Each structure stands twice: as structure tokens, then as C-alpha cells.
Image (cartoon, rainbow, N blue to C red; front, side):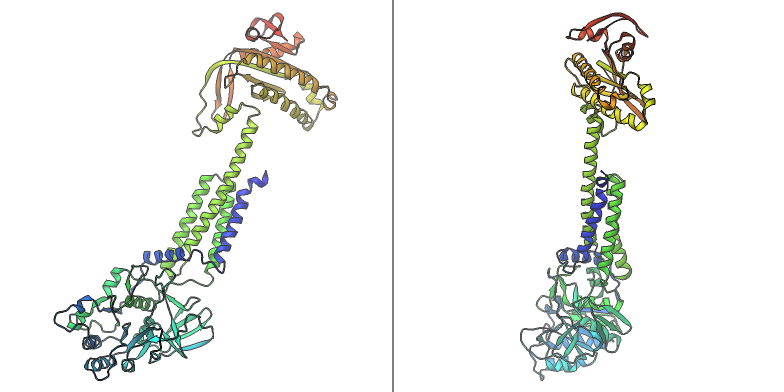
Length: 613
């Protein structure tokens, strides 16, 4: 029974250990998609800070549909680069690959090569299935041992821009983007390795050129990256995570290439800015799904990476975060188990809701404060699992307690009364009712003397046997044990449910009790102490049945002359020398042959004719 009461605690502890183990399991990839979507939700709920020095020039549809130009040829592109350089940009990063039409003598190529040389330019390259040459110039990089090269960094081939464009650029960088299993872009490779050369991602190299810092430093396992005085944690695969900017933030930092070519921008607009040049057109630039929009231009994604590095707000998960999350789940599970043992279901559910809200709110707060990502999805799922298990355990405990309560109380009350009490959800008092009731009162002769001979434990042992059998006989004959007072049993028939021939069944029950009690007196344990005979009084009549008493202590009983007379008749057996004394109304209603004892004076009732078996 003790173990059953502790079942919610045991279940909560076991469930929390299982859930915590699942959070730190090495191959825990089952809910990766949902977990990443939870991170997407957080990164969009809490807008990332925006670096004022980032500008994106979008080669949009306006450039391609102008009537007064030749569209977007190399001459126009050269003009675009010239305008940005003349306006004082500190660096330009582009993910447009100029790999076709590589004639050095063509006017557009000459103009563009010259424009590229006027400002630090990072030329992006893409992955390729054939060898088109190695990107150059190769950016500087320092490695601090120990360092484990991430397995995703090595690449086989790259698609690069014309060689003379690269010759005039300051560096090369990876402009390719590799999505997660759901194709969403949430992170970029910090570096890619082609042959013996390492190339940073476009946003990272753009920031390095714009800031004029020295060679980045990488090291560690999992790897970390240091740029200037800033240190960034990379994930186990060597990726930099970023927060996708909202459409509003993108619009604020973006200018149309048409306005730049026409000179429709304020003087010094690009001064001191890191400028990304790309396109939102499908035929010129990639459109990839991110947390903020279903199709975000690739150049905007690179700008988001640069924004994360410049602001230092890089979403990341610490290496020990899963352990801390598992510890929280373990503690929460124990708390739920303890409360499930001590409290009812509703308070436990309320505590569970509070823990779930904490599991949702804390990741948001911590991300806003430090850009740290907590697996709120996994924690909430774990808490719901623990709540389910502890709830089922508590339900089983309550169900068992109810079964025990119904069985226990049914020894003293009819099952219908017990059900009415336990199923009365509003806790409303049972309404009184007037009905014919047959009362049976029993008493043990010489009980006071007996109680002085026996120790309390010995007396209780004898009474347990006695009352257990007497109460069972009353229940077997359809009666209700109203109460057990000292050595006396008060029972009613035809209450609270209708009982056919209740007078005769009460008389049959009285006879069975007499037979049993005479037999039990002969048992050695009873005979040794001279256990007295049982006197029984019985009468029928109209009574009021219902709850009586103050709110703190209620008694379900019957009141009426017949009840009082039955009590007096039990006492009358003393001077009558009988074991069973039956009142006149019961004798009149019974179909059994009874023996008249003649009229006798009964205290409170006057002269009454009495009967016995």
C-alpha cells in the first residue's frame, strides 16, 4: 500500500530519467526538424541586432527592364562597382559568379577589372562538379593546435569568376549555401578547403576586409574562430549559425542596383560600409528558404552572416547545454513526482503548466540575452511525457484508493449510499427522505466487565472477528450498518434503497446473528473470557433518513419512533430473558410466526406488546 502511494514519485523519477537520457543521447536526431523549427521561432521572435555598416545592393528586375540601358552587361556592372567604390565603401562582397565571357580585351571586362581594383572586393565562388581552377587570392588564416578539421570543409571543385577579375580582387570566399534536411539555410560553413587552401565564407571574409583585421585564427575541437578580438563558437561541423533578418530589416539595408547606377543615392551613402552585391532574381542569384521567409536571396543570407559577426550576436549552443537541459528535466520530473504523491491532480497539472511555460520562456530570455539556444522543444516534450506518466500513476493510485474506499465503506453502508457519496461531485448534502425503515440494534451482554478483563489489543482482536461477521450478515440480508458504537451495532433495512419484505429479512438477519454469536461464544478465544450473548432489538416504522450534523462532521442515519423503540427493545431482552425482541409493528408486518411476550412497559413508549422468535 505504501509502495502504491509512492507510485507517482517512482513513475515521475523513472520518466524523468528516461527523458533526460533521451536529451543527452549521442544520436538524438529523431526530432531534429521540430527542434530546428523551435530555434527558428525563437530567432524570429527576438529580432537580432542590426549592424548599421551593412548595405546590400540588389540587382533586381528594375535593372533588367530599363529602357535606357543595355540591361545588365559588364559595362553596367563596372559602373555599379565604380559608384560603390567612389562613395567610400570599405569593402565589397559579391556572390555573382562572372565565369563566362572571359575575354580580357573586351571593354566591359576591362572596365569591371578596373572597378574591382579600386576597393577591397571579395569574389565569391560556388561548388562545381568539374575543375574550373582554384579561387584566388587566397585569404590569410592561422591555425592554433590542437585543431580537428571538420569533415564537411573539404570540397573537390569550385566554379570561379574569370581569372583576371580575381587577379584584381583582394580575396576569394565561398558563396555556396548548404541547407539542412528540410532545405532551410540556418548555418554556413565557416571555411571550405580546396587542395591545400582554406577559404572563409563570404560574409566572414567581407567583415575581415571591412574591419581591416589580420588573419583569422581557428582551433579547437569542436572548432572555434577568432576574428580580431571576437571569439565565436562553431558547431561540431564547423558551421556559423545566423539569425535570418526579417523582411523589414532586409528592406531597410537594401538599395536597388538601378538607383546606384543612376546615382540616385545621397553623397557618402556607402562611406564606411560593407557592401554586398547580389541579386534577388532567380536567374542571377539563389533563393533559399530561411527562418524569416520561404525564399530569401542568397546575398541577403551572406549579409545576415556578416551581421551576426559584426554584432557578435551569433546563435549558438554550448557543448554542455544538453547536460544542463537533461538536469533541468531530471529535477522537474522529481518535483512532479513528489507533488503527484502529495497533491491532487489539478495542483500537479498547474505545476506542470508552470514548468512548461518556464521551458518555453527561459529559452527566449536566454537567447535575447546571450544568443544561446536552448532545446525548449525537447524539454517541453520531456515534461509532457513526465506529466503523462505521473498523471497515469496518480490516476491509478486514486482509482485504487477509490476502490478500497468503496469496498471499505460498503461494509458499513449499502453500496448505493457509498456510490452516492463518492460520485456526488458537487459535494451537496444528500436530501432527507421519509420512508418505512426496519431498525435492528444489537448489544453484547456483560461487555463492560469483559473490557476490564482484556487488554485493549486483545479486546479489539475479538471485536474485529465479531463485528466483521455481524456486519457481513447484515449486508448479506440487504441491510445497512448505520454505525458501530462500542459493542453495539445499529442497522437499517429498506434504507436507503427499497428492499422487498424488509421486515422479514431483518428478522432473518437477527436470527442469523443470534446463531452466529452463540456459536462464536463457544470458540476457545471467546469462551476463555466468558464472551456474553448478543441481545437484539427490532422494530419497523416511518423514519427520516439523511445527513445530520455540522459541516465538519456529518452522519448518514435515520430518525423516528421505530428507531428509538428498537434501541429500547434491545435493552428489554435483559428482563425478558430473550435474545431477540421484536416490536408490535414489525410483528404485524411480518409473515413469520412469532411468539408473543405479552404487553410490557417500555420506557418512553408506555405499554407495548412484544414478540420474539
